[in-house]
Image 1 (spheres, rainbow, N blue to C red):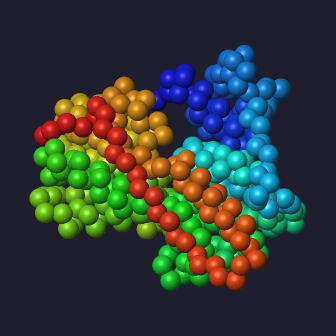
Image 2: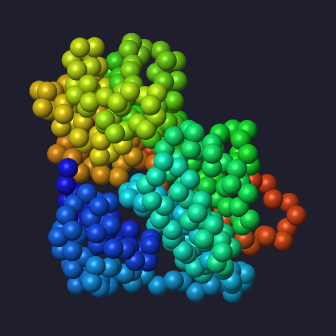
Length: 362
């Protein structure tokens, strides 16, 4: 599903401003469009004076705010570590960078390549060999095993650290590390409550299983639907054949969703994430099932959910706010580095429901 030009250019500008600069080829991969399309958008943004382009590279024109004289922000940079090609986290990065720029702190962005696990560690070790005074990190953590394996070394990082959009397991060695995350349980509650309020009592979740957010969404859905009076039937499937790296979760074809709607009478669906949701809606249409006539759909992420032929009702995590709050928490840690008392904080931010055209009363 292609994005509208204005929305695509907005995301290009946000990504470039978050990183300082970006390669055209990388932007094309993240937006899932051709390099020619991105070049055309970059040319228009450059003509509008919003960014600077060179051969194959785009640079931001957003200046770094000067350091506030009353704050000791001199010396060292803040390392920002996120996975490559992760549109959801681009907005988190943008929020974090805005807060750090306002505080006069230099940001060094490190992109972790797509790997089974541990790809952030060597990147961070190289970053710490430079003059890095703080760390904001969103590990990929495709499996529970890779997540657990990273807890120890992240907890041992020698500079103040804030984990973004990740919730380490309670009682783990990383439990006492500062973290800022969306309350995904509440997001799933909003989705199920919205569908149930419209009369839908048979609800299916099509979700990924290759990130902490995906696993949180799946766990919340299982708990909420099992304990919600009035829900007659519920099920969980993968949202795409490549959505689950864990061998314990069998891959499923997207056509399974259409089959469940027809065979078991599901009239409501929660789909995670946006791209998979838009593709699943097309699969339903191919099977002769229209949204929302035959099945009401709520997407989870709200990165591109509004751009479908039928704009999707969606749960919108506060992505940019997660980054900003995480950066502000790190700034406070850096400014109070000499204080003896330091209590870790685990902050949860509330998502919101955005009602569009993909849901209606049963």
